[in-house]
Length: 288
Length: 213
Image (tube, rainbow over all chains, first blue to last red; front, side, top):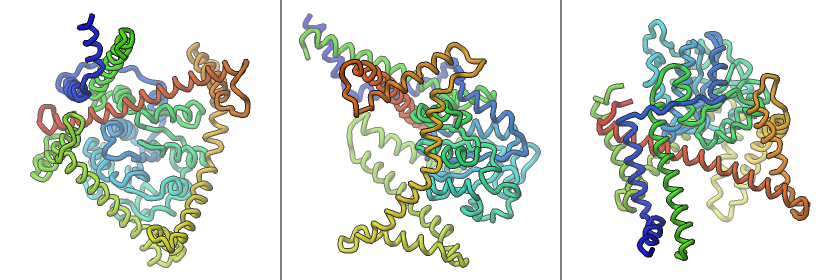
């Protein structure tokens, strides 16, 4: 009796560093030997996919990089998957960022993962995205929601040139783009509440469609906009990214990472069960 | 993509791996000098990047425009300089004016869309029944959201005492609120785990155990 009681007490008082080590090592295993657990697709991911499927080469889309390097593991795979889909559809893309000052690094990472996106001065072959014509990168723009509102009113009021200093009037992509009315959809990838800014300033005031590739913890709050018909879709972190990779038929980083995520969740569930068992058993036997 | 071949990129990758391990040494072992070094490097670099970008922004968005004859932007510069009086006790009052200006501006910009997006849109979304093609699950979700919203609102109604018959809806509302917060917490755990998984993946890539992305 005494011995078994001490097991429950020990279980509840296990050094958390042991749990972290188990977690750290367990996360590595699925990357080395992928498990390939099935991925079901959420309604919000389908909705975004279906919306983009209806777009074509005459449409212009804004991809807002509202996440920093620290959130690459959560946001970048989804951002890349959606960008790939836009490239497959031939849609023109404007990349910009009003949230994080390190977005240049993110843009480099996107370009490295989508070889069709040719940078300024790079030759573009058939099927490639020519810089300035098919896509453009505006860099970081300070000002938060005020800037988002101004961009909706008149992009030229805020931006005089792209990231590389080319005046906006000399960029062919901007020939027919002046404000939010000329943009089919803003797809905002965020770790914060930048999605709210675009809903308030672009969707409500100009009717521009808005979607989010957010971190998992933002999904439940953004869902309220989807439910209310104010957003056309959303991807839930790495899980949503894996769903999108499946939808476009290009399995990638997110699909691999999802296995690791599943393992981590399993460990968390086991830890919760063990801790609760220890708590209940210790109390029942008068140990706590 | 192939593993970096450029010496600078290789060094960068290994420094990244070292700093990752240094930061995680805090939870995997204990706080050490290596951890502190990594922490200070992180804070220093983050500050340096932000400062550089901010200076670039001020130059491109403000100074160039003023030099180009758009003198209205001088007002922004003056307001910005007024903010810098904050550390000096005797003239601190000056910094209150730009703060008030920023608050008013922020409120004015936000309120335009907030009423529709955050209040009217949410009410409409909560009480609009699903369409003709709706499944049983859609109807269940609709009923759950409607009822849940009403019960949670009842919990936050403080003008009526939560006693008698009114006790039960407020209690139920509280439980539904806790369920919502639980789901939110679950999503938070997912986000943190993904960040950790991303770092583990990075280490495996640097150590050439799995291919470079």
